[in-house]
Structure formats: structure tokens, C-alpha cells
Amino acid sequence: MERRSFLVSTGAVLAAGDQVRVGVIGSGGRGRLLAGEFKEIGAEMAAVCDVYRPNLEAGLKAASTGAKAFTDYRRLLDDKSIDAVIVSTPDHWHARMVIDAVEAGKDAYVEKPMSHTIPEGFQMVDAVRRTKRIVQVGTQRRSAPLFQEAKKIVDSGRLGDVRLVTSWWLNNQAGLSKRKIEGEIDWKQWLGPAPARELDPMRLFNWYYFWDYSGGLLIGQAAHVVDAIQWFMNSPQPLAVTCSGGQVNLAGAEIPETASINIEYPNNYLATFTLGYKAMRYHQTQDQCKHFHGSKARLDISRETFRVIPETSAPQLTPEREETRPGSFNAATRDHIRNFLECVRSRKEPNAPVEAGLGTAIALAMTLDSLRSGRRLKWNAAARRVES
Image (tube, rainbow, N blue to C red; front, side):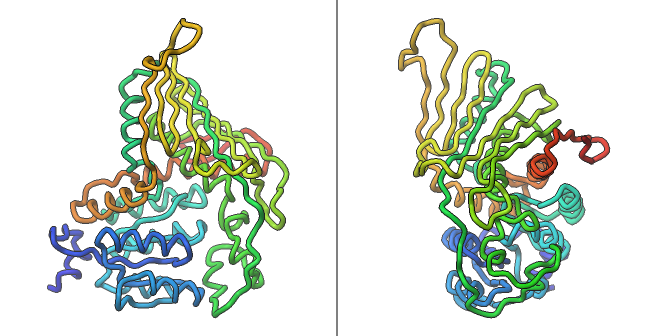
């Protein structure tokens, strides 16, 4: 039996020297960045799929020599020589594509959030576990050494009881893209499961900011921060979510760029996340932080460093009482991809498995529902449903 056909049918482990052949589905800016990272690490970027011709052509330039081109992702999944796929499409396509990929015997690296709705998330988990495929969600903090070290501090109990976690992501977004369509586009396929509508370049190039396809900057950035909080606090799923938002200050967008989320958890703590994308530009200096307020110490962690501040009765902390660890977040995406490729070979669980992706997706979907309804929403884990 041909080697890769055997792998597809049995889920057998790739030999140590075998190069993983990867296809990227959605070769916009993020897809091309990921394709470049996969190739740099040693994977063969053997296929590119996009429904917009300029993205497809740009994706082929970022891929390996001789990569195949597809405009229908299902034809890419039919290719038995492909071991794994990157799903870097708009959020509303993530679930269907990952499910189809694992059903076709492929492993998958899917951008965050894992799913756009809660039912989709459960369907993804069921499909991944039934097919025994490897799926990594693109929440790369789980593979960053700085975050892994800080996670050990929380697990050690040094912070004491943590009943409050506060967090934020601050930046300044000037406006939406005004790009024009410059090539062929299969708009019907791009819409996929979303409501039908006329071709609209504003939605094509700014899908991030429309309810049908995503959750805006609020969900895009909370996906990273909320996931890290749930990971550190060993919280599989939330208990209740309340979200309030300001006015929409980005012309043409549907989702506010300034908002605040309160998330209650079964293990007795409250997490808050504030998004402010009409603040000043922070240039990655404390622009996104999480503070774990323990009864014995506080852990502050950003992309650049973490700091443990112990309890003290002195008027002012002396520097030696604090523990600070500088670090770099620049390689986190590459570390996350490397972990995925290692798991493709070993069949071990990746750092960001689908169950973790589901827990975060539940909190994020409830965030959008709460923002739109103006209500505090509760999660009934036993019944798998949201309740008022």
C-alpha cells in the first residue's frame, strides 16, 4: 500500500525523517504568514486553496516549489498526498473545514477562535475524537516558554487563592480597509454557511468586523487572553458571561471596538477582559496584560515579561521581593507550529487541543450573545446550552 494512503487509513505515525506535506486553506495575510512559518520549520507547503484569485496567487508564492492550487477546499482534501491542513479562513468557516479535514484523514492547525458558534464547537470535538486526528487551535500562548513558566507558578499555589483575574488589550484602530476587488472571487463559496447577500468588498476585506463571519476585535483578541486565563486557572468552561460595549467608532463596522467582558467560573473566580482599540498605540509594551490577584501574591503577565509580586506589610516593595522574568513572544507562533508538527508525527495531544478550544469558544460565543442582548447569560454545561 502506498505510504500516505496507509497513513490516512490507519492514522499511523510518520517516520522521523518524513517531511509533513501541508495544504493551506485561506491564503490571505495570516494564511501566508503561517505557510511561511510551516515551511521555515521544515514542512512542505504542498497545496494552496483560496476562493479569491489574488490571494491564491500570493499563497503559491509563499508555498513550496510545485505546490498545487485549488479554489475548492474539498478538492484539496481529496489529495491523498496531503498529511495536514492549515485552516486560516474567516471564523464562520472554521468548523466545517476542520470537520471535513479530519473526516478526510487530515490533521489540522486551525486559527482561533476554534468555532463561531457553540454547537459547531461540540461537533468539532466529536469529529476529532471519533477520527483520532491531531488538531491544534492557534492560541499560541500555550506554546510560549514565558507563558508555560508562568503557568507553573499558578499551578504551584504560590499565589494563594485567586478570586479575580483582570486583563486588557489596548491599541488604536484607525478605520476599515477600502480595498477594491482586483480578481476573480467565488463569492458564494466565500459566504458558505453565512446568510446570502450581494458581493460586497467591504465585507470581503473587513469580514472581521461583521457579526455573520466573526466577532470583531473583541473576539479576535479575547480568544487569546480568555484562553490563557482558562488555561492558567484550569477552567474548562465558564459559568456565566456578561458583556457591555461602547458605540461603534470604526465607520462601517458592526461590532464595537471598545467593550468589557465579565466571566464567572465554577471554580470560584471572576475574570474581566477590556478591549480598547481607540486608545493610544502601545507597540507591544504592556498592551495586553493579565493580572492574577492571589491572596498571597499577584502574577502580572504580558507578551514581554511576567512579574510575581508577593504580599507585604512594608509601605513599599523592595526590588528583591519581586520575581521578574523577561521574555520574547516573537517565536510563539513558530513554537506552536513546531508542537503541532511534532504531534502529527508522535500522535500525542498538542498544546491547544480541541477541548480547550471549545471552552474558549463557549465563553466567546456567550460574549457576543450577551453584548447583543444586554443580558447576563449562564452556561448549562450538563444540557450544553445557554440560559438567561
